[in-house]
Image (cartoon, rainbow, N blue to C red; front, top):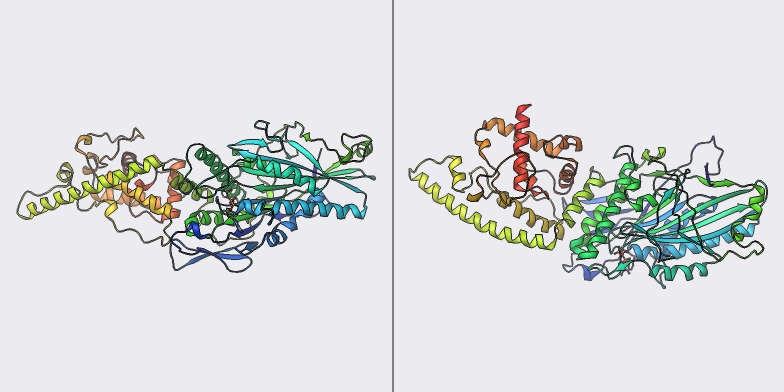
Length: 628
Ligand SMILES: Nc1ncnc2c1ncn2[C@@H]1O[C@H](COP(=O)(O)OP(=O)(O)OP(=O)(O)O)[C@@H](O)[C@H]1O
């Protein structure tokens, strides 16, 4: 059994650490994806830094500093030499290394990892280099013997599928007592040369699930993980065996379903992709100490598999692929923030070593496995054994030591941002959007009618007609003067960059806000119980209880709620009545993206907070705040 020992240093010596290296690669600008011809919104500054337009303020740009920045002109060779090659020698010493490509769909992950015949990507280059390194070691004749093997799998819709044996079903993921991740039943193929790798890998890659989306003709619908194992065995006393693993990961893209045009099965796939990437972001947050002690590796298959590549024992390189077009702005922004967080993770490498009995060392040399007399490498594929002892998730002690502060434009966690963005970008299906647009038109019409009516009543009042009380205004469906509909308020000038998603959300919010100020006669008797009951469309939120309240007291409570909404921590938000964990995170996400709420009613702009829910929320919190 492989054991964890220090990275070649005496056990008592200081622990060596290795953090995740973060590289960012900018894809060349593709005109066809940007009809408006706005030009790029991201630009490199030097080989480590880039800048992106600040969507909150167009006069500013946000700067990010990474281990490496590869601009749009960088070649595959340059990316390999500068970002990937340095981690490879570790796997010859029984340590783990991983290289994974992260980023929005269509930003260039597959191009980077796989590449093409003319421009081979990181995977073929890395495997070729491993063979070079091994051959160089063997030439030294230092008593070690090496064996290389490969496994290749994809995670599709949360299922682990063997790409070398596509007929297999969902494979289980296990962890042995030494925290090695194992996949019983996964095919392992011994490799004698790079060309042998090529003959195995190319057809297996065709088994990967891809499909055409609006943004990418051949979009990866799964996370593909290639595992290259190097086992070295010492032939002379003391007989030892070390196993080094190299994970080469091409993640599926984070998806904005409005832009991908996903429907049906594509939408389901997309849900699984976004969920696993979301969990990946939570893992990163937890490793950085933002989410308490538990690292939620087990919340998705992807993070479970990458467990020893992130915050574990591996030398990791994350290549974040980003696209320069404005239409990718928010995806790019999110990816950069994710990358900036990951940069702080510190890994502790260790050697996986087994002390062998002399007899085992002689008879079970890896190359000779299964062929007792021949020195030829074994040709037969093997399956990983069943080792199933599992351990609870844990935070590696080194993972919380954050040495570098990224120049992140925000203080919120990735989790909050992703939750809010995901909600915003994915939450509104086509049908619902059409319905909302119709509602906007209808609401506008009704507002015009109400305005006319209000004008008429004001004229009457001026002419000495009866004084108008606020109550009566509501009874006649006229808006009180101090409560103008949110949709009539001047828009906050906060986002100069106005990507498609945001403007669409504004329309949607407009619809909800306008609706909530219309008081249809039929629904006047609506209950205002504090409950999250059935939806009833646009209902007047102002029921009798408000008119019986002391105005100044009410204003004070309103301000208090507003201040919690704008400045409250997750805990404080959850302290509000009818706000649970999910809503609190949505609020934080909203704040992150849109800035401060200007009035409590802005809460209705959040998805899932209907007029009725807002009404219940408002009443409960006003009453609770007065009761305190
Ligand atoms: N550095 C680059 N140079 C030239 N072309 C590129 C580069 N990066 C990406 N491309 C091209 O951009 C398109 C999208 O890239 P790719 O398929 O690699 O994206 P992806 O991030 O893997 O997307 P998905 O997540 O949907 O699979 C492809 O046509 C690819 O050839």
